[in-house]
Each structure stands twice: as C-alpha cells, then as structure tokens.
Image (cartoon, rainbow, N blue to C red):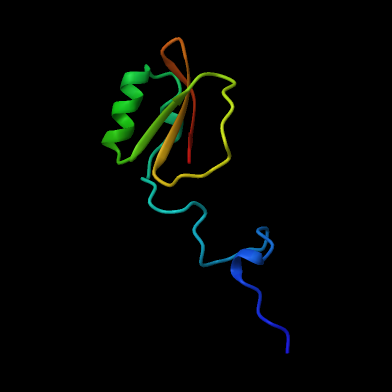
Length: 87
C-alpha cells in the first residue's frame, strides 16, 4: 500500500475546492479604485477598509513573491498610486 502524500508535496496546480483563492483574512475591496489616488488618500482608504498592512513601492522595485494575507501593495510615483495588488 502506497503512502498518502502530504498536502505540501502535491502539485500546486491541482485544484483544492477547500482552499480559498486567496488566504484569509483579506478585506473585500475594489482594488481598481486605488490607481490614480494620492498616496495618503489611498493609504487611508486601505486602512479604513480593513487592510492590516499597506506597502508603498517605487516603480520597478524588486520584491519577493511572498504572499502576506491582509497586506495591500501600491506602486507609487510622483505621490500617486499607479498599481495596486494584494499580498
């Protein structure tokens, strides 16, 4: 009888209906509303909507692919949000 593989050893491409698309807890928010906002306004909006961490990065910043639940990332230039993504 073959041993059952540990979940971390399974192909990450295999679907798992029990796993949400993003780890909790992430607030329900409209990420398309952030680009174009001044940084201070975007940060305040993010915290008001329940994001635990807000990270601002310059364009072309080198970042790790580590996903952090509850974190919202901004690419910022000239004091305005250019791009927004969770994790």
